[in-house]
Amino acid sequence: MQKKILILILSIILFSAAFSSLVTAEIKDNFYKKTSQISTQTQTSSEIIIGNISSSFRKISVEIKNIGLDDANNINWEMTLKGGLLNRIDKTSNGIIDTIEANKNILIEFNVPVGFGQITLEITIENAIGKTINGMLYLFIISLETESNIKFDIVAEGFNSPIYLTNAGDGTNRLFIVDQIGKIYVVENNELLNQPFLDISNKIVELDFTYDERGLLGLAFHPNYDENGKLYIYYSSPKSGDAIDHETILSEFKVSENPNIADPLSEKIIFRIDQPEANHNGGQIIFGPEGYLYLGLGDGGGAGDQHEYIGNGQDITTALGSLIRIDIDSGDTYSIPSDNPFFNTDGLDEIYAWGFRNPWRFSYDEELDKIIIADVGQDEWEEINLMDNPGNFGWRILEATHPYDIDLADELGIDINSLEDPIHEYSHNLGRSITGGYIYRGIENPSLYGKYIFGDWSSSFVVPRGKLFYLEETSPGLWQRFDLINDQSFNRFVLSFGEDENGELYVLSKTTLGPTGSTGDVRKIIIE
Image (tube, rainbow, N blue to C red):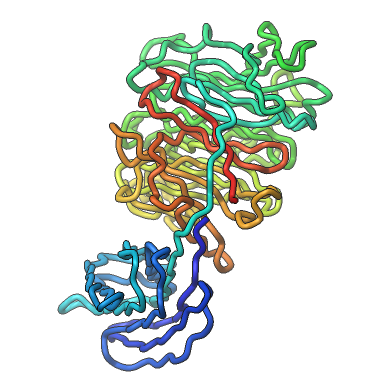
């Protein structure tokens, strides 16, 4: 896998003045060794002399973070790579950063030509003419080594749209694969069983083969599944009323006497909600550490959450645009945990967190004791959130950390600073639709341990150009994104990720756009 090298960490306070630093760094044996000189002057540039870089390096990322209390505005930047073999590299990139909000950051990336020796990175940051920079800027440079020994072993194939993978937690380490068209399959002892574990294809809405976000979308096994045999699914059902597209249903099933077959007649409907549009259905189901069930629902679809006056994301009277949290072990169908934020007060009792556009996959990490949520953006930004308490995650007031309908906050009396900030965001210059994954806690790939593996569905709607990434907490509270594979593009549509009982991870993907064909497969992520 790629290895990252932290070349420099340098704090710089900027008010109305410009700055300069001269830093010489040396790299030996692919590890950072020392910073030989740091000095601050009154010029406008920083020159980072980077030692002999091998052809395995493909990208340099420069991050500028505003650690002040005020916004930093109108920042001119220019960065130039020089040197290399026969001094042939002379690559410049520049631009203007309109605003870096307080405690926010901007990432600037360089694609580095391969096959070169020593290079120099010169960074210039200065005021736009006639204006000042407020705030406090924190600058650091990251060099990426992209030499990769990652591979993907196909463990099952021939699916229509493999949209989720999980395990039953019963000690068998079977893999349960959800196909969007309404079927769940079992992989046992590395063999895909012919008969589906469950087939509800007659219960789901008729899918559009060209493209559809509906179908069988989620599966979770009860924490005591080996004792009670209960499992939960989430699917799109034909509409039961006017002015809606369909309804989504959370149901409980039980396993039959055959451990590889669920009882199709055991369905018990737990929760259902009308969906105004065909897209943004969410669908992730997990059980949290307290044994409660969490279900993620999108904002109801369409674009811009134009539902009623304030949209569904900020409407605390609807489950749409939220994560609901229920106790399915008590009550007739379920009960409400008393520490849900709207329990016995204004707002829907089931809601635990809200302000989501389409939380497409989230997972619970026991070591962090947090839920990691990937929320699909609208026009410009994708985001990843950490959640350990109830809260408002911003949509449609914000798209990630960026204003989308900022006036809505004033209308609802919401303090922008009270909204939950993502730990990471990226623009649509990189991808179009984030696919959440897992923090790796397995044992087969120790170099991945503690890294959050995730992806992007595709950078193209026509050609499959999925991407695979990981986040690493490089310092407390600071999560950095890196490419998981060399060429960044996976050349498949990335649908989902899965985890087996041992914490090993899988990526689910296909090459057809809609729910059609049999190009879907499941691949185990392996570092050789």
